[in-house]
Length: 255
Image (cartoon, rainbow, N blue to C red):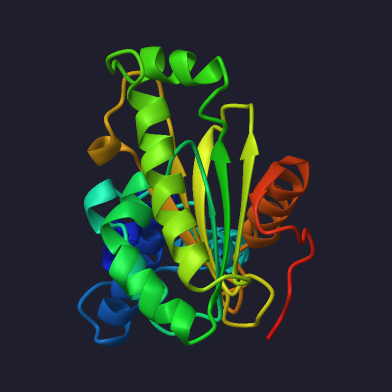
C-alpha cells in the first residue's frame, strides 16, 4: 500500500526543519502580541534559524519530488501480483485481434478455454503459441523443478497441442504454434502486442513453486510501461527460434 502523504511529514528530514519553522513562527507571533520580549540579538538568531530551516525543507521536498516524478512510469511494470489476481484468458482476449502465448505448456490458458478460443477464431482472431517441445529432455527437468511425477509436463504440453490442433483443423490459417527445447523463466500472454492498446501478462516460474503461487506482472503499451517492449521482443525472439508444428508463417500479421 502506498505511503499516505501526511505520514511523510513525520520523517526527521522534514519534521526537524518544520518544527523549527513552527517554533520560530510561534515566537514571532507571541512577540508581536506582546506576550514575550525579544531583543535584537535573539530576533536575529530566530531569523537565521527560520532561513536555515526553510532552505533545508525546500531542498528536501525538491529532491523527493524529482525522485517521485520518475516513479509513475515504472510503478505498474514493477509491481508483482499474486496468481489469484491474474486475468483469465476469456477476459484478456474478449476483443483481441491477436493473442500471443508463450511458456512451458500453458495448459491453463488453452485447454479450459477451447470453446472460447474457437468462438474468437470465428471472429478471425489470430493465435500465436510457443511451447516446450514435449519430446525434449527438458520436460523431465521441468518435472523435477515443479515437483511433479515424471511425464507430467509432456502430457500437459500434449493436451495444449491437442486442443490447438482441433482448433486449427476447424478454423485453419489463424493459428501458428512453435516448439522450443529450452525452459523459459517466465510465461507470456500478450494481447494485440503491436497495437497502441496492447497488453502483456508475464508470469514468473521458480523452483518448487506451484502454479497458483507464481507472481506475475501486467503491462500495457498505452501505459508506457518501461518493460513492455522488452517482453514483447522476448516473445518475438522465442517465436522466431521455435520449430513450426502448426501454421507456417513466422511473420506477425496485423489485421
